[in-house]
Image (cartoon, rainbow, N blue to C red; front, side):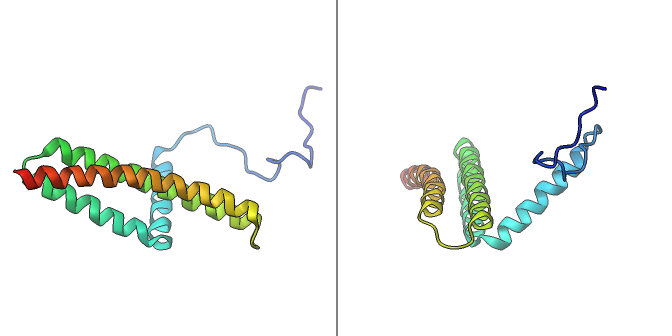
Length: 135
């Protein structure tokens, strides 16, 4: 009497039912798959990771541990924004594979988000270079 009738217009009608048992291991597995895919697809991720870890090692070597920690946090913010940007671009390409001025605006805005985070990190790296130079 109160059962829900499956509607073919329901956007989730083709999805398997959600499991009640939460598996953090499965969640980490899927996240790792996303990281691997992101690093294969976006060369910027490799470049940014190398810069982040090398800078953190140099700062830690010079006993600037707090700056090394903040640098790693900034690196992960930048990498996260790159992953979000890549996801947004993939969805846009899936929905509209041909060129579209509206899709271009969406992609440009997503790229601007990465650029803002990157500029913040770059400003921090310049400050770190200054701190290392005056030591």
